[in-house]
Image 1 (cartoon, helix red, strand yellow):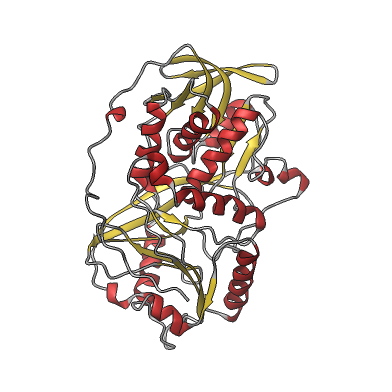
Image 2: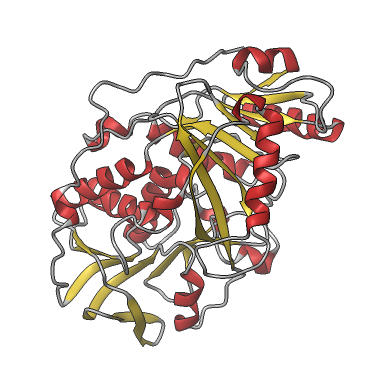
Length: 415
């Protein structure tokens, strides 16, 4: 068993100045070899790996707001790869290995902290499912352990493992290599490298339509003019269904609000990440000291970046039950993003009925942790016109063939 402690904030890990490229906003050129729609983590990572791995730099990243101002700015920083199914373990473990060398690759601090994640089990069925997932992880080369309640308390002493609560902790899975990273630093790191490669990062440029010629998209209509394109990569989290409607491509996507919150700044007391599906909450502590808490998606569909109070109320009740020490902590701020969710809770990645349009959507709550792995694989898919082997199982056609990657309930929590 591995025991973790909360690392101190690294020296010099203060907030850097906003990088210069955030204020450079070039006029779009008439044509690009590749146009990436969506300037969040996935779009920026795809741009970086197009340049780094494939030498493709005549690329535009179009963002309707500001770079990384959408879901990338509204995530909860968690990174792990302990998913049940082979296909999910493949892409998330690839991403985690890239996370482990990302600061060196980008030449930029991302405050990646591998403090481990505990996924709690509260019932006999939870225990059976969790042990199964541990064994599946090990078969896929993913680090995983099963811990009893006493071992859980050694990893995270502030978790309530007593027997007299609604959902007693009967054990937990533990992935020591899991952790957190600072999401805005991650975005800036990818954007900086893309900018240095000569890729145009174009903000306040919303795509309003497409120009097609048979089975190809030959141009995009935007609020900053028309742009001709060789290939289009769709990476607009939460709103991809709107773009697909413009192209006449049906996809089984629903958009839902996803909420989270942070507390006031506290001294370092929480050494790891704790997640619980039964009481539906996850809690970690950020580098500056705030507690980061969230739950699952709001049930109603919608594009509004706000959610129902009942979700926050339930997750706070769960958090206080698991962590009585936090009962007097004060809320600092809460927020919501919009996520696309598929019927099998796995993403859609790959080719489309258009020869030159590649698709990346439907990550639900798992998008941030996959950022470098998805960027690597989508860049390959874009450059070669065929899916990278790691994302081939996540194609749109699986919903007609029945080859689903059903992570609903298999990954211990919605995240």
